[in-house]
Image (cartoon, rainbow, N blue to C red):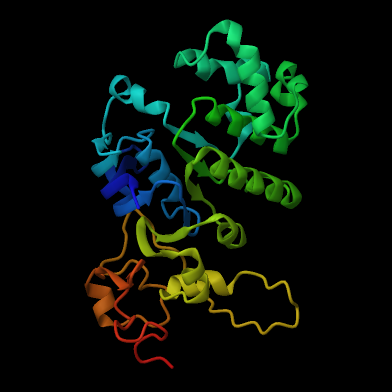
Length: 332
């Protein structure tokens, strides 16, 4: 398996001022020491509560946020921290689909003009070839050529998101970050867009970083799933393994909250108490220990090691035994 992106120690800290007169400096640790390889052709999903750093991770990978530290290598070339001019050659291959397509589409441009813009910018076709290219892009996302003359306000939410996907495809990319790309849509439309993304992945050999909070959606589209908490990766595993045998107490709590389609199925919710700590002042040791039902003294003092429990299944938790990954230490 070939790694399209190699990410090591990626961090993003935002500085801000506090107090009535802005006389106190503070740092938001939005992302800390994130490391993963994204394999060509796969969908790697990131899940976690709001504010855990999922979107910041995607933005830092694409250099939309300048990382505070760490390395991002695309096909072996370092791209972290590049300025806009140096980053421009990589923009064709690295694209993003945002959560709200309406805010990312120019209301004064027709759909055809919006799709033509990246093609012209990167010199991928002449003006004479544009109508045919636009028609092909619309067909890729299940839309007819008549939509090329419409404006964003004339489309539904699902249609606008299809246009946003088509615009990302216009550059013929290798890698696309889907940042909550379906969460603002109706459930029936979500399924259509999800199946569209799967079809496009197979057709064009795309690689996705899929950022979401809906675990049912993640299960359907992902090859691997990473769980984030307060700026750090806590568990990473193949999708089937993670959903069948979650190890980290945070992952177990997230999965136990997913509604069951069978109302007669037993419910065994593992409720978390307390609030998510502030990224302005994250806890020492394991950042989850303030809400963890099995936290111990070691968790409060020592950052857990990132380790493989089985091949491909990694975790950062002191309470999971190396010898028996089906149970927590001291738990039956």
